Length: 337
Length: 119
Image (tube, rainbow over all chains, first blue to last red; front, side):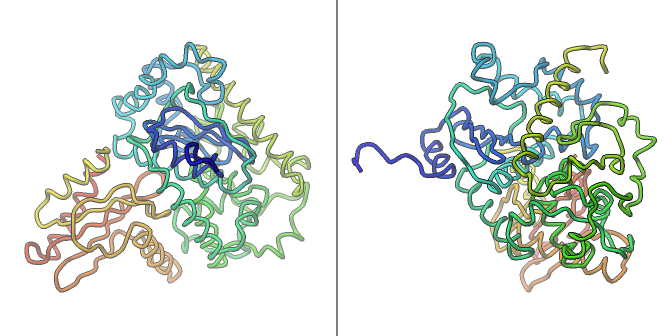
């Protein structure tokens, strides 16, 4: 308790507030479940990368806001072909640290410059991803963290960034809101919703209909968020409200009826699944090793253990790493697309 | 100043506008807010209101998506305009001085401003 040396921060939000006071630029590597990387620029949070929530790239591509071809073209124009920001920075410090800050600006301006998205909308998506990533990280325990000043800047970031205090407050608000609407956060995160027996699509907003089409009893909210290219929190919030409106099958009934390997879920096929030209391209679907296949095909007993959470997360992280490598390879090889 | 704030400053330059907020229609996250005057609520409250209204309308079988909510007080018109996009919609909440605009004009004006915000 010496007055000269402040005590070590007791959690990540406290650490981030302190880093803001120091106007720190770099990253905080958080290990835990799901863990992730918090990127700061002059003390403000510009990006949060975590396996627990879709990245800006996943959101823009999976929601089909931007096509893969256009994205790749913009990235090539930005002069960036590798796909290894964040944790890899310790090994790649020499190359990455010099070029990263300008490249981080380049992908954003290339996307805007190519007319793929407006500056306001891009900032909205980047800011939303910061809050969503922080929320996803708050759903599980944090084991340890490491401050990494030499980390490469993220490809895309919010500008100027989010104040750590505001980020912490909003994360608490989100948790409180969901707990009030549904129940314990852990329960929501592990729910595998299915549509109620009778749902008239006329009663549904399009984004609710999309969720129901993807809610096949095997996907937790995180998986649904990756599948539709939306944030984890908005997906959970929509599910909570749909549950209130009895659009989801009640959990009690659901537990008894979810088969390990069973008949198709009574979900209509996605209307866009067959003729979609983008389906031929590799897609980032972490946790799904067979990109491009219809959701109904992915049944498998190995995906169904409800108690194997840690194991599932390892698979998710592995799949994330695999898809990143595949993506990187695709960008390096100009003939692959 | 962020890109969002710069865009909202332009909204504020429009006649009669005293306050403008851009928020996420689903999460209620406020992306930016400029101007003075009392808003009908913060981003989270406005989003919750819009969700409540559109949810009830869907339940009641009303066709079509919610476009805007209009709240009038003795001093101001509050126009909450949904800004659809591919991805979760946004809301542009604008407060207009009642003395310097009429309601029909205000609704139309905010509709135009909402289109310009994401352009």
